[in-house]
Length: 478
Image (cartoon, rainbow, N blue to C red; front, side, top):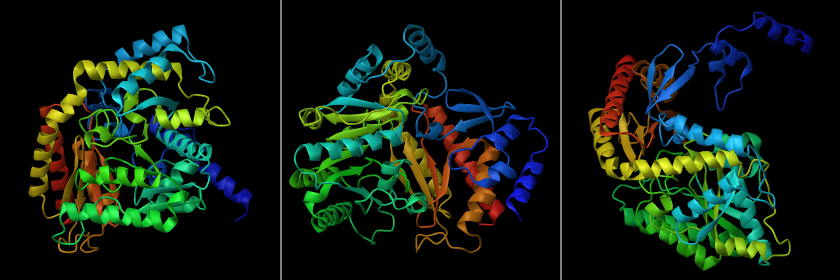
């Protein structure tokens, strides 16, 4: 078939103009990480409004948002008008201004507020528009810091297997998710990956302390093997999202990573795009787990995703070193970095979070969430191999072969179970959560709800999960 014939066939398929919102979206909108079936045969939900922990589609059907949008809508969907008033006032006063050698009130005040909330001497804030941009900026800041100090050989970064840090060139290079990065390789040179903290499938009888010792030993071995003087930074999420709510095995894990960074002159970067701003019951995951990084990258919850915003919080030492260097500046810039409207939204978001005790709410209700989800795991023990996580971020790993800790291909493979039974069951009961097949071939079900969730909301979330698991296993014959 010639190119002209192919184009004619494609055009014929869209001869009629789309009429519904779903049809318009399928015809014109290229969606994030969305399979072809959603553009062609599958139903495409169209959400039109939200309230508290729920969103409603164009037909008025309610869905419990068990993923807080995308791990980001900390305040839920009730405070949009109040944040919107702050946005409107800022638009009326100063809709845009750069932060290139100038400043404006929202960016200055937000940077001050973030510094107050951050651990240690992390007092300097560079703003970006999202998580990938934030990690991209952290890569450049780390490189420039070492170059300024006369250690230009430090160009390598160590990240963890299966970790996700973004989709831009540098951030994607940090990713430990092979399927996300391999299509676009070769990427940024010099990224190495070490084990993550997943304990499910570790040797039988291994204690958390032994796991910690193994992980730190492997990390130090990698540093020595690569040459400590070639490594710029180690980047880790306090709780690793990809792979399913992976928490540190002991409190000594991150303090051990910190000690290795200090020993070998390596910067420590905490990717808190998800864990920042209350997700674990503290303002930052690094505070929650008791360690002080040299940089924190953030996004998502800083403005409850009501406006796009992210950034890097760096220590005085790192930034002052760069400013004292031959360039006399951080050699990086973004047109929308520190956008006044986004910063105004974030300031109001943090004000509401403090006023409503949102972070304290997570700390108080986290045990209850764990208890209720534990009951679901026990009830559906036939398919739940592991339940793990912390705060308002939990994951079920599903297996059918408990001895091998894996999903066997019979009587139904993982892909068919997820696509043909679990996802339809979740849609039927009205629950939004993240369902994926992990790097080891097991289905993962993640919940990371709005931080304003109440005990009654937790009860509803658990009930909906129970219903969905029941329906999915019954229809799959498990």
